[in-house]
Length: 455
Image (cartoon, rainbow, N blue to C red; front, side):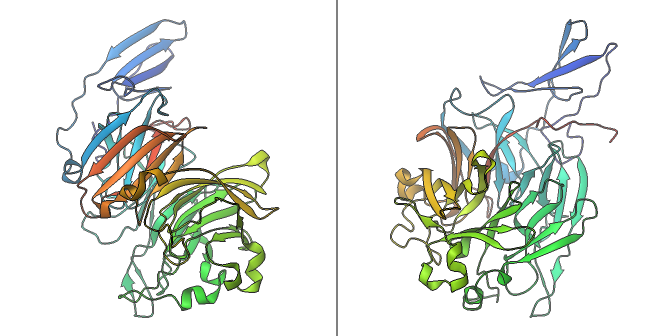
């Protein structure tokens, strides 16, 4: 049980068979479509079915009693499922809905809302799957620490394969202060290096990215958005009471392998953009900021919305879905539009609703066209001024996290098939900053994951 002491609902089973065998195991759920099944060359969990080379099978059931008490920040969060059409939900053989919170323990639920996995680690913002089926978690050395500067490559069992630590004190104009260096997002490049959103220690916060070598842990590249965007955007932005100037507030980064570029979202400019990773040159920009207010050299980079296409406001979670026919000039992107007018949003609709939105971008014509959206019909009840996420699950299904509902008193995660709700779960009474920052539908056993005790 809990072999690495951070994942109480997991177990590791080690056994031998006399003959060469394949292993299939199932963790049985309480109702239909909540069991979790996986087939591997070695396994751990509840039910094991061994298929021998001669085609015969053996079956064995293990009864494993897990801890009866959830930690208090999970106990006090009320989980209520009001809709779960399991035939239309995108569940697969072993997918759960993961709740990654602004802080506190991340956890995963099945279609009934039962907690099937959680980590005892406090995690901030980040639970990112990578190429080998492992996860990147942004945690901290101790629960009482103020800063999250411990990045772990781990798995659902809690085994740590690699650890990156970051200096908690970075100098600024005031002579130094504690800060969480990584803050909102991290991605893996094809060569397994990482791109992370970071604070650089200056009074201008959340406006820098770094490339981190997966082999050495060293920073190999720094991208400072102050060097890419108009000076007035940050020099004229009002500082907070602590002196920080959060003029951009980068909350996501995504890599496009077709043209080696980064897609990024800046909440406080109500802006999304794409930049070349090698040259740092901007490829396109989209915001409600009027073209006439941009310096001349930026105007040919602006995307023009087609009729009916919404302007983003305080958006989160910008992801690339696909480049049509691997053509970088024809892109499909997805985001969560908070629809709050921070600086350049739509003042007329601001605060009336939030929504998941999909767009098609044509960089030859420099146009952006809205192709799907969900959330407007829910109105102000599901308006969230901060946080949120949209994930496309298949051709028709989307998972949308209305994470900061009712001033943070609740989070509402909804799966839709087109415009029809097929799953609706509401989480209420979270602890401070324990609302759902992002919700993902993820396989517990990625196809690339292979546990090896001797690695």
